[in-house]
Each structure stands twice: as structure tokens, then as C-alpha cells.
Length: 460
Image (cartoon, rainbow, N blue to C red; front, side, top):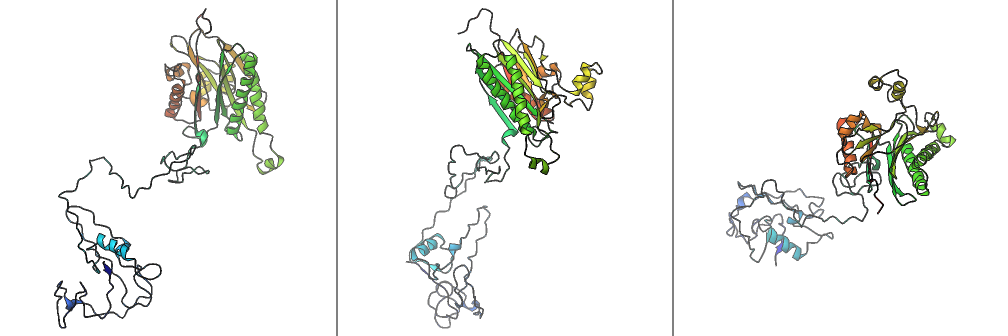
């Protein structure tokens, strides 16, 4: 059994290095060769606070010395680390550590602790001829003894988009790395069988004030009706993000209720715009106290554009300057803008006072003259029906996209040729087109494929 020893000041009968008995008058230890003449004189300084667990208050000569760490040699082998347990210590009651613990520590550090002896030989591991190095670029595997496995998070736990491991606090920050998480509306994507939409905050705005709703319903004869609604909040109004969200949801719900009853799609679109207007108007009904605390607030407002593909018809409806484009699959036919903006520029062109290039170059071009909101001068829902003779897609978008593809030729070039087969991919490409162009505004795009049923073909 090995034992721990603490040297006592003034003891001259044993060697300070190996504690073998000494003869009177010896200048060197006969066992280890220790130079007895170099032994420093005892100090009268006594520690009053226990250091490293090895000295008690007032105990004479009880301070411990850290073992000297060996210097690194030319092989670049890391210097072995020393732990606090390498030193003789005491437990919380002031007594010596258990013998088993001391034995284990002495066996692991036979040369690092000079005042430890063992009665049993210690087997030293063979020194390897060379130390293998990992291949360049290949990270060393983590030591399984030091890696704490991450517990599997419960289903539905939101993980950080930066470190991919930390959980996200309710305040929107990662518990692990502290990274702020993107808000849910900063980037949204949705895809159904026959329609898809993507919305992005853009590169300049601090939040996404756009919203969309896509869905499908069954007509009375069982044929499908596909719906896309896109709304753009008016940034100069109060709570524009709430206005666009309320309008898109109300219009979508109105269409889902009307189309299965057999309401004509164009009439259903008109009624849906009125329902969206009522939803936005309701946001302005605030308590009197709220107006007193925020006297500069105005009524929430937004624009709306929507499209329905049902029974061989293509129906669009809008208020404001959000647009719908028709892009044929074969690109042999013309690409057509299906809506007319409620804007200052459009009014100048319609009145013949400016051509389109001059009007949209003016700083007042994007001032809208129609919107949904309690302070709208007069609500005039616009609706139109078309019956294309070929297959194509309907692009329903906010001005965050068409500002970067305003002409129909530009929009035709930006829309992928396989949009009818991959509507979500097409919407992603168009949002990327706007971001690559500068992303000055929120960007929202919905893609509705329009398929032509051959004449005489019966339903399956």
C-alpha cells in the first residue's frame, strides 16, 4: 500500500528527497544522492489559510509545491497536464484522502509527485516509435470521455438556424450561441398540388409586411378551383403587416365558402375583396385610450391581388398596385399583364398626360390611389375573367418583384420555362431574382399553373 507523506520542518534523520534514513554527518544521501548541504533553512512563515487542500490553519510547514511540468521535447508532443489531484490533499473534514484514491493518483503520476512512494513497481507504457498525425483537412475524432451527448430534443422543438443544436427561447434567441432567430414571416413558403407561394422580407426592410394565402376548393360538379391571394401592407400606414395578414385570410376564407356553393368565380372574387376590406377596417376600431397614447397612428392599410383557376376560367381581382401576369408555357404566345395599377403613374398614362416610361420614372409613380383600409376614399374592387387557349402560369405578385421585371418581356424571361411543373421552384427563382436586383422591398410571389383541357375530353 502506498502512503502520502508530508515533510516536517527541522527533521534531519531522513532524506528530504527519498526519506531514506541518514547517518550523522552525511553530506549526500546514500540512496538517491540528494545534496544535503543545499537544503534551505526552515522558514518562520506559516500559512494561515489552507492552500490546495494541503495545509491547515497554523500547521507548521504544510504548504505544498506544484510538481514541475516537464518541458516539451523536439517531437512536439504536448506537455502532459497536471490536475489538482496530483498534489497531496485533504478531504472536506481535514483528513487525508482515502488510500485507494491516493494509490490511483500515485500510480498515474509516479514521476510527477516527488513526495509519493509506492511499495509496488509501476509499469511504464512503452514509448511509441512515432506519433501518427491525422490527414490534412480531417478533424480529429472527439474524445468520447469528454463529449457529453446532446439529449434528443422533444418533437416540435425549434432549433437554432446558426448552430443547428441550440434550442430557441421564446424571446427568439438561441440558448446555445445567442444568435437571433429569423421571425416566422421573414421568409415563408407553401406548396399545394397546383399552386405555390413564397414571401421574403427582402434586404432593406426590417420586417415582412406582405402576406399570402393559397388553397383549393371543389366546385359543385367536383372539378377543382385553385386560389391564390397576395397582399402588400402599406408601409406609411400603422400595422401594415397585420393589415395584409387579415386581408389575405379573409379573402381566402370567403372564396372557400362561396365557390363550393356554385357562385361564379368572378363574383366570388368581388365578394372576397369586400370581405378583406371589412377585415382591414376592423383593425382600425381601437379603444379611445390607444388613440390618446398614440395620436399619430392612422388606419392600417394594404393592397390585394388574387387569382382563381376554375372550370377553364382564369379570374383575377385586385385593389392597389400588386399585379397578376399571364405567362404561356411555350412562350410562343404573348405574356400579358392582367391587372391595371391603382397608382399615380397609371392614372397619368390613362389620361394621356405621360407615356409609361415617363410616368414610372417620376418619384410619385408608386403613390397608390386605391387600397383596403378604413381611410380609403372609395373602394373599387377590380375583377376580370379570361379563357386562355393554351397552357401557362399565372404570376401573382407584389411590387417587390415587378419592380425588377416591370415589362412583360422582362417577366417572361424571369419565369422558368418549367414553372407549370415546378411552381414552388419557380416562385423561389422569382424571389431570388428580386433579391439579386437589390431586394429593396418585401417580395411575395404565387404561381398558379393553368392547364387546358382538350376539346371533347371527358372527365375521368
